[in-house]
Image 1: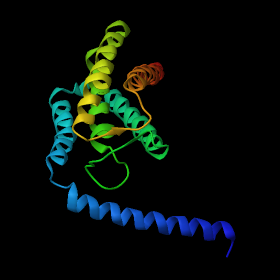
Image 2: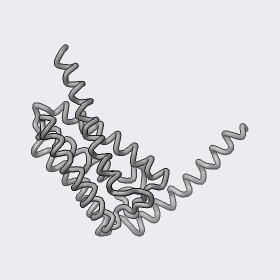
Image 3: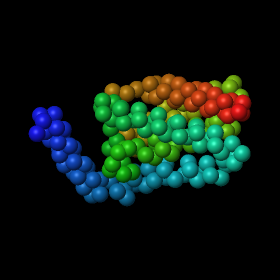
Image 4: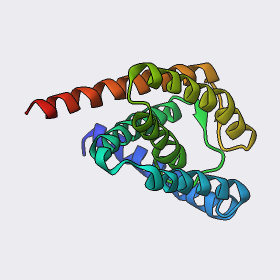
Length: 184
């Protein structure tokens, strides 16, 4: 057997053993704790709100906004975990992606609502600044205090700029797609 394959199999086996330990720890120490119920609320409440207020006439663009936010946030979160910028002491599920309530609920729903309610760039940027301030300097410190996240090599102001850059990028992409679609 090739040395590279042997090494890959060894790493895979070690990873599998770690996953089993992680699942057991989650089941015994995290599942149904008050922190877990907070994550459950973070998972369900945003989508419930979104379902009640979504503009069905703009559904396709709104879903595109959410999809772009989910892909970007989940991918960058995985990188942040791998390079040890942060960890999640309490998880909704013990498998990847680790921060499902944040990456697939809170953040994308916030961007979808922003896109829906702030159609013009000026109001969108203003709303984006408010959202970034709230998420980075209130939401993240509260999440840290609740032991939902622990930052190792990350600062809140990094998140602030990330939320703004992501929001602008998503709006640019969705507007471009919408304009291409309208022309046809």
